Image 1 (cartoon, rainbow, N blue to C red):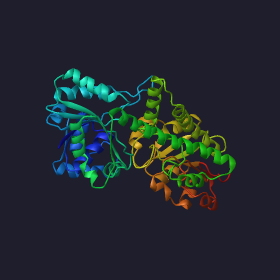
Image 2 (tube, rainbow, N blue to C red):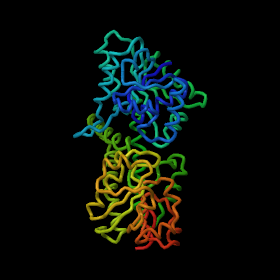
Image 3 (cartoon, rainbow, N blue to C red):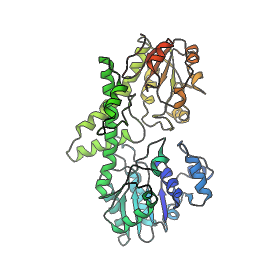
Length: 438
């Protein structure tokens, strides 16, 4: 089995490396000459735990290679995966499919013999149909099938998600394509992974429905957290109480400053736009999008309130900038709303993130970037936890208190125990639980 992976972004690189770990010959294609050169030197373009070792091992084994030449990659491939970006299109919120369609045109010119073309990128319903039309128009006599195979990878745990998935979804009505895809995912049959075969349109919808549902769960618990603060309830106990219900489940019920990243923001918006286009509006998801946007902006006000109503002339130490831990992804991170708002309110901002600072520097100006957490809070008026990296959970509270000018901690990820913070004399503000001090 030979696979070509078009695009070496997050999805393409992780998927390609994991397929090669299954024993498949994989060639990853990207037009970025520098990125391919770095990959050949073992330098990862993204931070994902374990990815560097996985790539190195499979390159050494000869199962994983890289190229900038799409024709070389696609020639003789049994399956060609399109894993290019589908960012939000400027102006209307729809997914920008220009990279997908451009890849389809190039694949059409390069493929040789029966080829399965697989959309791995997150694409709206009907994209597979359009990809098929583009290829058929270019190569009317070609033998091929277009398949939808959405990814369900979580940044920070993507390799485990690929190797031990909850399910694999494959959208096709072509029997030969079904056989190719079954062979490709055969290693997962050994661990009894559910393989869901369905129509192409259904597969495309499954991806969007899954992401928007999870985004709705996050937004729901964030609003419940706000209500808990008003009525004196504890959102963690509420989340546990409802999460133990098998119909609800405990995942994605962690309150915070709002969702971000490469998937939820653009996928919720894209599904909303698709639904409006088909005159079947999704009112719940429209509200989710609006509430999440407002929440990220409101978090700066929460920090200001915890600092006595003003941050003018004060120094704020920000711990964590990425949208979640174990990634360097800054796309739609809450920090992109919160940090500029604090600076605009007159604060001096110091910040530290274990992996995302190089990306953050491109997006956040006027910030003093530090080497570690303690340097960040040294002399600050308040410490703010924005991303729940493990190293922030075990900080020495005596050292934290000594470093801060005022013992104020704003914990937007609820990584600390309010009782312990009270015992240590902190003015502590968290999400969905009673704050301490005033």
